[in-house]
Image (cartoon, rainbow, N blue to C red; front, side):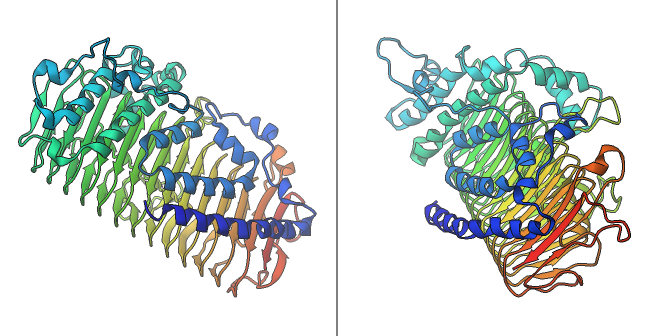
Length: 632
């Protein structure tokens, strides 16, 4: 990551240079209605009357109550993703903090010393020694890493296994898979029971320890440590497979505890659950590899249910092709993919590519021009008590959530899919069913460098639903964003949806409704464009549009921008509610353009001016309907 430090310095000074004027521009726009930015938030006591926020995260409340903290925290996220892109321990810890598991192992002392440290007075159990495999000086580094991992699995006091000990049996995994992937409602009570009983802090702590043990394996081993032919080592905790430097095939119905390979163009064909110890690891040092999980009825490579699954691929142009719960997906568990080099292709159906559901899912790709395709609930998707992270450091990347073939028609329009992808937080709304609502999680897509393309249907690209947080953060490049409805810094029903693009000449297209900085029904939709000459093809309810007690904030900091609007609630307008207490709670639409020669289509908006958005009822303006705009 040789450019990381310079990039962070540049971004820091960009942030400092614009932050002071940001606040003044927002306050200047709001001064037209005798308000300041401190007045822009949701009354948490009023919103609590609606309920439905079981398992609400503090991360959500932070932004729901303090919208203008989002730009700073977005910068922090960009910094930490840049710094931690190859540090799985830090990535797991950061994801855990977002879902109220504030654990950081190794802060004091070394939690791995009892597995890796030397102790001459107490002989350590050696799996490789007992099996008489990998004998000789050449294989010593490899033996030590395998034995350390195996020693960890034998520790009954290990926090990871203590968290999962009561659930690593029976058919819990099948029922959870059926509930989420097959959309079955039969196991609702089981999910709630597990969510109450499982010790998430221990799960996250143990996952960090496992990550800390794996990183040195990938960093320190070289191809000359590996045998000429693949070997298999049976153990009490699962199969351990050591590959060669040639092109090996790894095909297993039951995922091995560990596969470690020295190179070559390898093929992995694996789906399912570990047989004993709830851990599945693949470390591949080199080659153009194929990671295939064709079974749609089981989780795939890099997917975990009540366990942990990790893939670390250090180089090569790789193909990841799977179906459900794969490529960095955790369901009551932790799933992670770390791909360090190469132009990679990721193909998956559902709940994949950085998907966390009552757990953590991470996909971190460090380099290359990558292509990512999914159907739904993927590419940085966080469900209840879950954090899904998709991080891509550099390259011209393409993110697609299928919207040409209709398989999941959205309630808003049957002609498009509900994508739930590319930085989406989502929850379970059940106030109209049985009242068992669950607050959503945290979904984040962070792409740091490159000219990228994002394409999706509905609920995508920095979007949130039901007490959730969804973020899309793009560091630089000339990017293209295509979506339909509830996209690009928007959301519905008590959410926080945020899109932040730091630099580049970008093009945003939303074809139908509620997009590009728009909030509906106690949702904050915040769009932040920090630089470049940008083009906006915007629908109704966009560009700082607020609806039904929502808050819509649009802020383009600089550049010559083209706002291609077609009327409606846009460019700093709002629609108030007219029922019950909602009549007395504000709705905000805020539009800010920080500079440049801009093009507007609406008569009330113009360069170098401030305006009040025309009220939704011209004859009888509602005092709780606040719509403001400012072009500097």
